[in-house]
Amino acid sequence: MNKEYMNIRGEKAEEQACRHLRKLGYKIVARNWHSFFGEIDIIARDDDTLVFIEVKSRHSLSYGSPEESLTPEKQKRIIATACIYLNQIEDQVPVRFDFVSIHKGNVTLYQNAFQID
Amino acid sequence: MFAQLFSAVILGIEAQLVEVQCDIANGLPSFQIVGLPEKEISESRERIRSAIKNSGYTFPSKRITANLAPADLRKEGVGFDLPIALGILMASGQLSHVSNRYLITGELSLDSKIRPVHGVLPMVLAARQAGVNGAILPQPNAVEAALVEGIPIYPVRILSEAAALLTGEKEPVPYVINRSALMTRHPQSSAAALNAIKGQEQAKRALEIAAAGEHNLLMIGPPGAGKSLLAHALLDILPPLSFDEALEVTQIYSIAHRLDRHTPLITQRPFRSPHHTISYAGMVGGGHGLPAPGEITLSHHGVLFLDELPEFDRRVLETLRQPLEDRSILLSRAGASILYPCDFSLVAAMNPCPCGHLGDRLKPCTCTLYDLRRYRRRISGPFLDRIDLFVEVPRLTPEELLNRPEGEDVATVRDRVLQARERQRERMKKEVKSSSNAQLDAKKIGEYCVLVDDAKEFLRMAIERFAMSARAYTRVLKVAKTVADLESQSVIRAEHLAEALQYRSIGKTEL
Image (cartoon, rainbow over all chains, first blue to last red; front, side, top):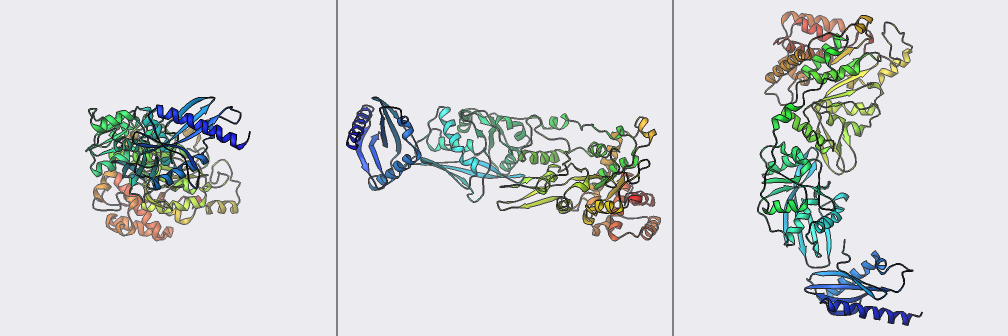
């Protein structure tokens, strides 16, 4: 299982997540947005709210569920990247962090998955 | 959007109003509480989040800031849960803004039920002072809060009820209680009535004088003679608490987390009997963060009984000296400095010697002179100087033990004490610092303690005979004045002095 194969699998999962979100009325703004701190898989708009979405897929639960992979460290990286996005692109909008978990093709959306404390 | 509500924080036995400001802005979703909150307030974020969600509202996923003003005052307590939650609901537009100013306090549980908090009484007093329109607080605290006159109390059970009340959706019905009924509900207990104690007539009389003039008392006697029983009996002959005094005591117990739900108003004088291993912080107050009240404050308007006086840590006894004079204690710590009242009657008891039988008719004392000196040295002279009455509590004779106790009716003694107190209060109306004979200072003694001529001559002889110091002289005069008061006499006669001299020291076991 090489790195390229993993990337393809990741991309497929993100594609599936995007389809799911569009169906729910989200408008995709950007994908794989990079910063020094890390990457945000999907940036979308849900009504007025700007939503930063992390997608995680797992085919087996041997290494824990996709939900468990959203560690506090991971959250911090996403928040830092979101800050940079807000600074560079647009500010003064309601913001939310969502999480999409994909397990064996089942898509689960967690709205407002985490916040800043 | 912005919303502002009022809550309160406890400082000593008083409370200060705190503005709870909530702002909701766009930006990264976060929830912060600023304004020097202690840990329990920072933790309230999780309770508030769940309580809002579980009462059918939505927790806004925006940038939420709650500020507790004044920002430089350290905040403790869980009572901020409810005002912050309501502030968030108002700032997010889920509740309409209100014009009425309410004091709001209450702890939230995750299912949005409102739990009781401590220190409600001082909070409501502070709110009345500040002129707010009412107080919204937990149902279990309602009776305690309703003790305060002149401010409507609105008890609530769950978050949505508080919200409805705040916006006027629910008709506010103030909670009222019958204050005078609370005062009469608990008569003074008579666990150890004075006339149920066998013998010890002199000690009983000393207790009466102590009660009448607020004098401090030291009882010396062998084990089992009835010292503890006598100390408890003092409660019985002290005049009953006035409503204001009861309120003051209740306030102390409210902030000390010692008020129990079923007795919202403490109507009996407290009796505190700390064990001799007590630390000085336990005695005078202290602890981390805001200093908590100690035993001397918990016995405010009551009796502090120190059994086995020489066994107490010397440092603890020495810390009592200043509060005994000032009737208040200023605790200065890094966090805050707080003034607690501590107007208590000190009753102490000790054995005459380490083995306990010095001067006993039957058992010989086995202590050496060295033992005796060391035992007595544990109590310092300056501490003993603050005790006006010394009384011996000897072993009972077989006749006293076998016969039924007899003596004056407790009510008679109590009446006499009450009248003596009244005389003193009337006489010292214009004094700021003192309201009883024990509180007279050297300067005022000349003014208030007037002797008849033969009493002067008697005192002159006594001074020479007993080689009395200036301090001993003032003590004898103060006690003699109380004895005169008990007999409704306005001047001190020789017989009053003669009785007072008996309590100056203890004959053969001189201290």
